[in-house]
Image (cartoon, rainbow, N blue to C red; front, side):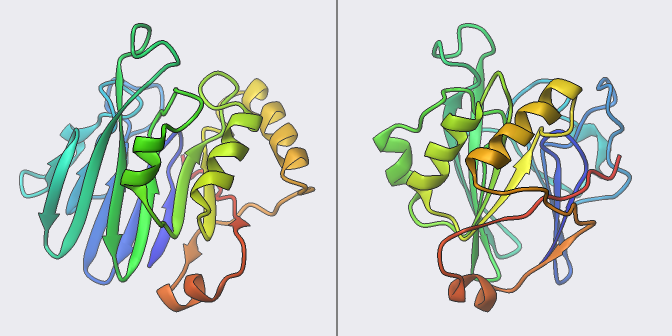
Length: 212
């Protein structure tokens, strides 16, 4: 499995002859939309930085909302959450996605803004291998993000949002301190296999350089 980061909450997942994308920016976004096609596109919510389903061919399978899905051997589950801490009154709904392929369980949090995960959501997510989580001073502050990570216990954490503004970068530095990490080398891509994840003790933080 090969993972690359395309800014905001957009991650490209390549698995053999399949390509998945989470939260591609739309043409209305201030960020560049992806320049690649995808077999499956996951949309967490209807904001321009996350809902670029028009970027892909008619053959692409677009998933946008809660439910259970299966396409080309990929199993996915969308779970309804809120984009803010006031039950969606400010920013509306958000979908957290759980995806399984190559015997690896991925969990993409979109723009989860509740701050804390409910017992019900925790149970629905279950055991995961890779967590894509926004580290954002507004939606998921460092201390809240750390609590989510400790509760879900993923093998690998890949942060989103951290690069957006100077404020985000400063906040991310604070997150790294709380995480007991100093400077972390940004990577162009992450290649990983199920066996590597299963053998990991505890969890690892890896930062992808945004390809924007």
